Amino acid sequence: MKKPLLLVLVWCVCVSSGFAANAQKIHPVDSPVYHALTLLYISNGYAVPSTGGPWSTDELSRMLHKIDRSRLSESGKKSYDYVSDALDEGDDSFRFGLDLALEGYYHADEHNFVREEDWVRGSDERKPLADVVLETWITDHAYGYSSFSFAGRRFHEHDLDEGLTSAYYGVLPFTTNLFFLYAHGIGDLDLGMPYRAFGALGGKGWSVQAGRDRLSWGPGVTGNFMLGDHLKYHDTGRVTFYADKIKYTMATSFFAHPIQYYPIMETDPLDPDYGKFINRRSQDQPSEGLRMFLGHRLEWRMFADKVGFALSEAIMYQTAVDPVTGLLKDTALDLRVLNPSMIYHNLYIRSNANSLLTLEMDYSPIKHLNIYGQVAIDEFTLPGEGVAGIDDNIRPSAYGFMAGVKTATPLGTGMLYGSLEGAKTDPYLYLRDNGDRRQDPGEFGVNWVVAHREYAGASTHMALAYVEEFIGYQYGPDAIVLNGNVGFREYGKWYAEGNIFYMFHGTHDKWTLFSQFDNGDGVNDDDPVYVDAPTPTKTHVTGNNGDVDVSDRVAVSRTLVVGLKGGYVILPGLEIYAQGDFIHMANPGNRDTHAIQDIQLSFGVSCSL
Image (cartoon, rainbow, N blue to C red; front, side, top):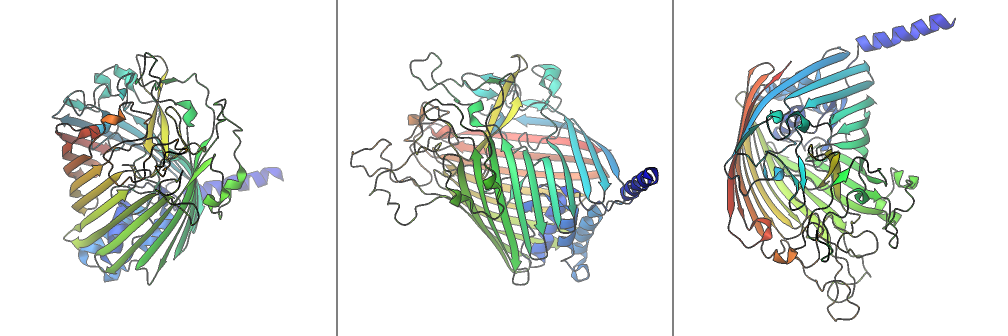
């Protein structure tokens, strides 16, 4: 009896594998399928589809079904058919793919733009020399994806004066993605891959994903306040439920605890390494502590799909440190924080968590036009908590604001699109102390700066780098950003796009020490008397974990980037592409000094087998 039952089960698995519907495939946040859907929605007068990515095929198919193909122009039908064809991948249960790319990079100023982060088209956009992709649909409810790339590391050494450095990106005027031709040869192979690898389960109206992938929450072009798409990857667990008018998402993302890589810099004036970057670590160092992003997001649509709202709340949860010993306290996760309906701010666990709230809205008043905005609330003063400038020890307000318009019009064989966007972030957005309401040099905070652990240093045995970035808006606090964009795309064939970016950035960065405001009466004023801090700041009053000479920061940095990019599909699977950017930066590093500028070119050819 057991043998026939086993045969029946095996037969069921085989049948379900052979006729998988592929509806649980997960599409990345930079998916051209989602991009085309967004333009179709705007051109038809709808609010943009769900901005909480990534998305399953089932979810994107639901989005597409809102569009009536019969009412589209011939140009609109081409974009519609592109999406429809991309979502219908047949009944294969397994796919093996090999993506090859050869890229070249040139820049003019090899004296001032010598760091990896100086590139507009950075490591998160460069294509690897080779990428082996494995996809499988075990049943119509399960999907697996792995991407094994053959590429060079973005950092190669840890320099005491410069911190993380690249051996050739920026140092040499012309380079390629043939990384083994430079520096340490094959020793520069990036062994941190895979950067996109996960399993997913799902059905009609729901999806669960666990593994590595990129996340993005929001409609922004230059970034988003809660989760930006600029991080190389998230080690994430994500569950989402969606219907015609509403969607709920709960996501986690795990990072190294700051105790693994702090202090960043030697801050003792008596130490011979004073002002040097000392955060080089070894893989022999045991991993300890817990640092987790935990967020939930509710999206809903109304008024005949012309208005979309999204409310997101999250905490950065991490193991607390004993202020006396400097050692980690209990490393266990308090399971109460996993409540999917909880208001995280009201947990009142300041030593362990820092909460952030974002509100988003978009509205399409007419066809071809969408107006959107988002607000981030990090720190605010409740009634009865005191007033800055009058009372002592008042925490600075920390908000982020963004507003923009997007347009899309079917034209010829594709879509013409454009956008205008502006964003402003307060000087202390994302920054905070470690729970004791003050922060000294060398101390990390419970903030919204996260680190990826990467191998860096073929000439230094087992050297590790902890690469820190904002998990939310990529430009961080103390910034005013303006951006304009226009482009045309015939999906699956060719595209061309132009972009103008201008940013005012104050003196505050990811290493700025948190400070409370005092009233200036000289009584019990342990922190700097710093009542007014408008964006962008021209002085840096508090300390900085990555710069002991912040007193030299006396100017607003201004950055202009004018860029063009495009690509053309010669044959199915064979594409050529290029990007050029002109960068002009006044007061680099917030120092009152001469302006610098650079011309950066990237070009390549890719083949998908």
